[in-house]
Image: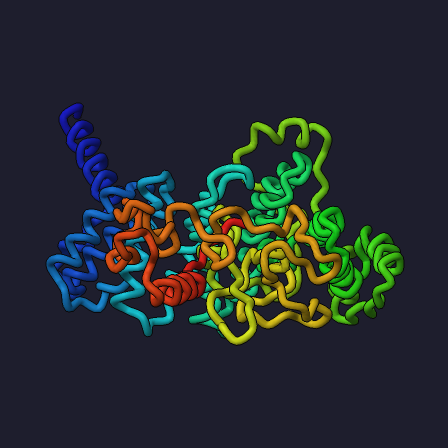
Length: 448
């Protein structure tokens, strides 16, 4: 009797175990799925379970073993997504490389737009505060601009535009803080060198009106009321609801300059921005903000077209002050921080906007269009490479020859034909003028 009971119990337990055990469908004879599909399904299942490395290994095996598989593109994208989700500096680098690799090999697939968006988001998620290193912010700006230019009809366009506004808010905030430091310190050149390109490149920045006010104040203190009035006019016209608008009108009235009418589009835009809901931050959050590593984008604009032009080396982020070379008839160089600090009123093509001063913005040293003097903020420094103020060590403009007939060490080409009595030949003066003129057109970096 006991033997019968034991036998029946063991049989029941065997049946229960047989029911609980799931069959391996990938090895069943009835499974007709291709091996590449089996690898892909297994890898995706591992990734969902959190086994990122195991899943990537299976996907890489699929890519290497079945180069003509229909799952090749999906496998490449899944590997990049796996790195992106795992996070970390090295994994983000691997994710960006994977997404860009996918875009190169499959540029016409619908997933290419998603891959480009992920590249931008990888840098966006790594952005630190505005006063920290801005490499990721600049890369994010470039990638979002690339996305909007390549895929203007993609459903992710609104999200990309807002992220681009936030990135540019962070970039502009970083430049504004540096400019404000120099402004308070009293260094007009350094302050204007940051403020001028900032206001030109990032008009949607939440403090653009304040930056324009600071620029106008710098010019007013430099006794250049004509240029200061241009910036005050920009505040009245482009930021009519700004807290500085009333004071800007008063300044223009005191200067005897016409007060421009507010732009209706600017009024609409500023009204929408002021009425937009903003996240409220508690006092505890503000006090603990120093310990937060992420940037603050609460005041970012929610409408308006962000800057879509790539940033060049003469814009914020560098300490190079680019000579505008705005002399009539030359057409050389780009508009930047020119000799009279009129860069805020020149576009990248060199054409002044509406209301800008029409005078020569690169006057001769020692002269001024209004009072005959060059202000401190506008005077070119010694050795700026111009014909009137040559650098001391320039080979083409140094002393023609020594009185003892020997050529100076810094100028050999210009003094080979000098006479032994120390008198330069008649043609030497003309050669010096031509050389100085060429350098005047070629030299693009001049101290302001």
